[in-house]
Image (cartoon, rainbow over all chains, first blue to last red; front, side):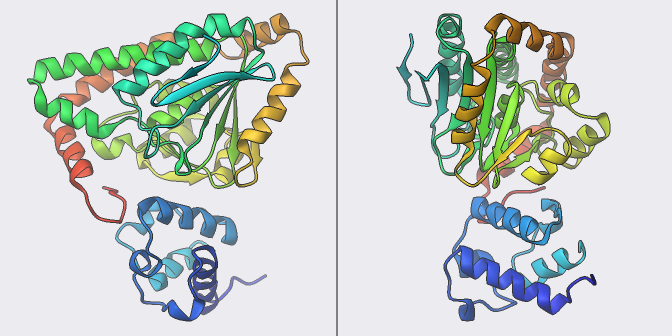
Length: 82
Length: 267
């Protein structure tokens, strides 16, 4: 099965974040700072990382996310592991 | 003392299993108070052991099992004391926590860590002394110490080496990265994965199962397959203390303590 496209991966990241943190999906934009938009702290960010790893069946070392705070870059990091 | 309710840990016997609960906010950071109460538990353990067949270690806090050593306390003490006294204090702390960890490691009953969420550093090391690790699906493990210029100091490296292949140990230690339960099970660290919020229930079921077996046989089997690496543990304390004295560690601890960003401090 071919890997999903970058756009599809971004959609899935936004859907998962909206659903888990109970934020309306339409309020999340690809370039939003997810710490601010979701109102999460570093522990919740780790929780999000774990959920994304499970969802995509990948390992995403946290050092690859250093300085990453927007959904689009996060989705790109995930895409590179698919 | 069959039951104890402390400020950071509590224990009781439930259906033949000792349940040691960690409950120091925000995420069971292990500092001097937790150490003192864990020492109390280690002292009570021989008496508890005569009335139980298993020990379950778990956390009642949502954030996780334990974020590890109390780095704020470590930094603060380093600031308040002259260097020689601070180093002696660190060594004494490590020797005391090793004594607790070794007592748990060698306990003649089956020990189970039921972990969830953050299981980092000293918290990970506490889980590693247990015979079986049962992990919630959302558990996350990490040895972040190299990020601060240190190595794990509560027995982590020798116990990780005891359980895992050296290549995996190097990856986890030298990158300081955190990893999830799937990875933990794949490398042989976690033996059972529980659904979210179910690790303690699964641990209780496992404790009930091990209670069916002859105690002396179980203790003999454990002693045979799980030797305590005493020499390496002593060496770990020496290396930790050698590294602790360097300015880079003080700087790493300061950055960690003073970091106010919502993003985790990940050097």
